[in-house]
Image: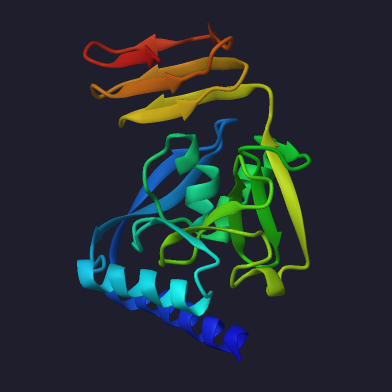
Length: 231
């Protein structure tokens, strides 16, 4: 009965996304530099009372076994949270049909569970991220809240054929691009920027970790007023 009720609730959340919200298209990039068309919310998010209601609804439904992390919102979904926002990206709302390039273009490779690992509920249309507690993961439930929960203790587990774990590949490639709007990429190990032209006062920000390197190669151009920033 609980499984049926949860499925109905999730269907209601998805229906509301399709009829009540206004989005605009935005392009983001995978760590390998593949462009992905996603949505950013313009209007139609929850009221504060609605956010509180969804939080309490799921906590009650799961008998407080799950831990509330952040509020319900239409600005992003589970895939955005696990694969993009936890790497420092902005709030976006993708679909599984175009977002699967994150794990199909070589940006992430199959692995075993560890802190920060991306978790894919295969055929369950859901993603999560591993935490420092091996028994718990974090994920956003459609346009509902983000919860910390056991991997099997969520609405999607029963619909997944299996669970896959991914880690980011060692190198990041950003190649053959014209950057006309502010863009952020997240480098891993060696970050290669090759044949890139930054125009229209745009800023290309490269965020890297300790011990990583950025290599600029090829016909790299920065027009007056534009900027390449490595942080």
